[in-house]
Amino acid sequence: MSLVVIGSVAYDAIETPHGKRERTLGGSCTYIALSASFFAKASIVAVVGEDFEDRDRALLAEKGVGLEGLEQVPGKTFFWSGVYSADMNDRTTLQTDLNVFADFQPKLPAAYARQPYLFLGNIQPVLQNQVRGQMNGVRFVGGDTMNFWINNSRDELLETIRNWDFLLINDSEARLLAGENNLRKAASKILDLGPNTLVIKRGEYGAVLFRRDSLFMVPGYLLQDVFDPTGAGDCFAGGFVGYLAERGFDLRNGRADTQELHRAVIYGSVMGSFCCEQFGVERFRTLTRQEIDQRFDEFRRFTAF
Amino acid sequence: MSLVVIGSVAYDAIETPHGKRERTLGGSCTYIALSASFFAKASIVAVVGEDFEDRDRALLAEKGVGLEGLEQVPGKTFFWSGVYSADMNDRTTLQTDLNVFADFQPKLPAAYARQPYLFLGNIQPVLQNQVRGQMNGVRFVGGDTMNFWINNSRDELLETIRNWDFLLINDSEARLLAGENNLRKAASKILDLGPNTLVIKRGEYGAVLFRRDSLFMVPGYLLQDVFDPTGAGDCFAGGFVGYLAERGFDLRNGRADTQELHRAVIYGSVMGSFCCEQFGVERFRTLTRQEIDQRFDEFRRFTAF
Image (tube, rainbow over the protein chains, first blue to last red):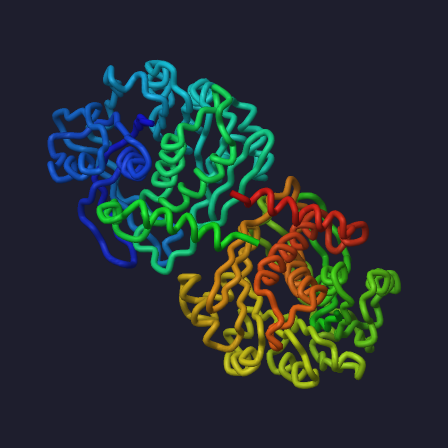
């Protein structure tokens, strides 16, 4: 079943201990949609400038990503550059040029409005809410946010996530949102804010899924080589929601097996791990569903007792 | 089956955001033996001073810990004091008085020499090796070390662990020992140094077990309240080796199910989590085997997919 993804499409300049790239396709929407595309049809709503290259559009099209909602306007595409520390646990942002993304007003094509799954990437909460309001009959909706909105648009954010099924954030964001350092207590507070499902990403250490009646923990996949962690969290999101879309997960109509949520967290972890194996989105050019399922099986083998 | 544990017995002064204790029983040997005592007979080799209190000896005896090798000598017991940060992810050592521990020369009672399991807590590698040499017919031997020995007694340490079955250290120690930042590559190098089994502890993030032919990852147990993390890593060690002793794990004679090692890592995680629930060793006064097994089952439920 199909999925709509809102977020940023960007160009990134990235330096890691393994090398550098001056200008490579990036942005949350790009990573989420590419990752989800291995499971389900993903259609994006995003904006790019005149400098957006045909070969990048072609990569998305080749993976079946729906591009009707990819608006191209005068100006330059969102640009970000950053450099990672030697152990890749820290990164420093060198430059953030919002460019055309500064005035992004998501316009949902009519054909998107009745799609059953919606992932609202990290943009202004008010805009996330507007998009949400244009969708009819959505089955499973949620998304991401960041410290900036938690600090500066708290009321709008709370209003926005109140009607989400799931929230997918990292541990520092969860602590900030809940005002609570203990992760389990923080999760409990966040579940009071609306979402019935909370996924907290912990980077290389894995992820935890919280629901009122259950808890699911997964350790991080240990890679032999981490080339570039950029986008790994977004690829986790894409694998998570993409898998649920593939399975037709339907919480609202009571036809959902919540064990599917656990498997979705594993597929998220799998996609995040592949993302780190090459620069930017490179790994997705050659990745196959068979490789994905093999790594899913590895997760089972590496965690069974 | 029974187990010998070598290490420190100490008094600790601890301050966490939940309160403070001026003088509470601690030391690696204490935590390891108390934790292991829920699974198997644990006998210790350690030294204390004249100030060692009867009630602390009584606690160990009550848990069935063998005290024949607990030497009492003139002087004061090892004393450590430290304070934890607000989020308890960092701690600052305020004071370390080695006292009688400075001249510790482990003396193995004759009755210990033929016990099948041996855990060598973090002391001078040369002393660890001497104790190892006094044991006959040991089935499963290994232990811990720390950055200080890796940096300052590297040759002695390598000579010592060459004949160990397992090494149980944390991630920063593993990286330092291997001279390699990537954990999977570091583990591969360490397995070349002798031990057939490597357990890397990652604090609140869980642990990973590495063998030539297998890998097992476990996420950290999420506690509602972390009162005091002191000793959690040692309690992990005690649960790990204690469970294997209980099961009669016997790698050398080919009668071992390596899946038992995975379950031992879970029991280690369980014991580490209980340790954090109260100050010092307090939790072990009331802990029952039933609670331990319930948490083991929780681990299964929280990680199954």
